[in-house]
Image (cartoon, rainbow, N blue to C red; front, top):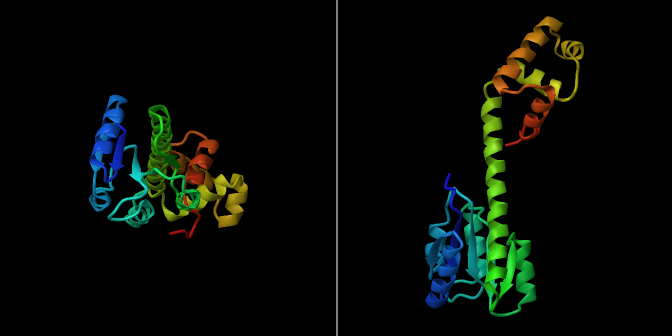
Amino acid sequence: MHEIPKVFLVDDDPQLLRGLSRIFMQSGYSVECFVSPLDAIERASYDGPACFVVDLNMPQMSGLEFQEAVLKTGCRIPLLFLSGEGDIPTAVKALQRGALDFLVKPLSSERLLGAVAEAVDAHRKALAGRLEWQESQERFQRLSPRERQVAQLVARGLLNKQISFELGLAERTVKLHRARIMTKLEVGSVADLVRLMERLPPAGAA
């Protein structure tokens, strides 16, 4: 995963792109600039923390159309919108669709950098959560079907004798399953097991 946070700038004004790019690079961000929103959509992929800063009013497509197109690609990089107009209804619509902020030009560098820092931090946390989920899934796949049943019952707080009755197993067999589960899942306590199980989708979920 890339550690340097990236800002994708999308605006049909090359002069504005140069100015914003300089501000972000001086603040430690990696920057990619796009005059064409269509080019930005094709590039809408990055495996590190990032955000889009997008002009609301562009000749090829509006910022809202851009937002919709990016979402259709499966990209979940946060979006911030820039606009020269205080268009409240459009701002509300953008935020309802998942934009993190709506910034009206002109604005201070501090305000812009603050909004981008929040967006990048939110994306960093989302990526960390996704990685935890993937790791939990991989560990859970190590278990046999019977061990998964036992793990789910342990996580619900059932005692060995209750699990024994529930599954029709000898209590000694349940203890053996529990020991294997803790080893395979790399957890040291029932509390750790519960936390891992909470990161998994419900049984039967896609």
